[in-house]
Length: 260
Image 1: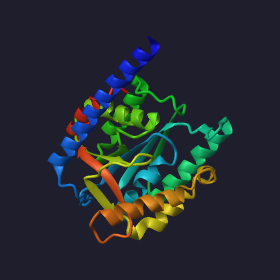
Image 2: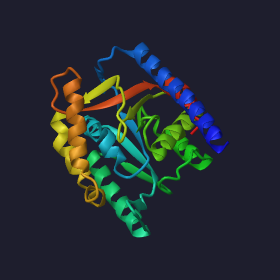
Image 3: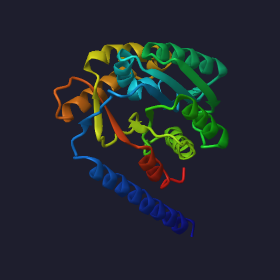
Image 4: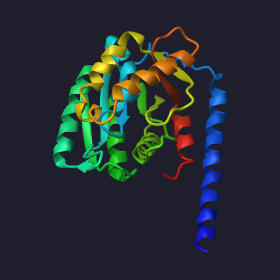
């Protein structure tokens, strides 16, 4: 009996999952060809980065932020979790270390303000306080572009972050381009950014997160992913960051299909 109920829920999950993936692919086809286009950053003056954990910002869109830094952009980052649970260890000391590392990395990226909401790792939910804080920054900054994890990322905190942004955006009267970045799950991008001249600067910013690079080879991860994106882009780049970029309205619509 228990096995039958379990299988029923698994099948319902798969139906829902496949429907969401189908909608994502349908949206992608309607926006562009299968080859991603270079993302136009010419009119981007103000940026908000929404990151689940300290270091997700530089890994997901650090190269693009360096491009914008050269153009004199204004940027803020919201780090939603405290980074306290690092590997098998959980402590306040790690949380403090990761906060300091994030501040150093943000400074390199040209970020003017960093906000730390302090939620626990792996327990992030789209609660009212998180949504209201993101909404407050949207109202204050009025960004041209917002970076967030892809809403189908294989990490619960990343999916929750994407949902938090969607709920805040739904209450925001302005408009912006939403750029979903990839981290632990690759996406099918519709836009890319050439970060070749800034790859070493991105690596330098990643190195600020020493507590994490000691556990995982984040530098190799970034080089490999960004090199792969350049090769398959069809563009003469050495390194590139890839995004699924859509309007605020479309992002809200896609996110609404997720329960989490």
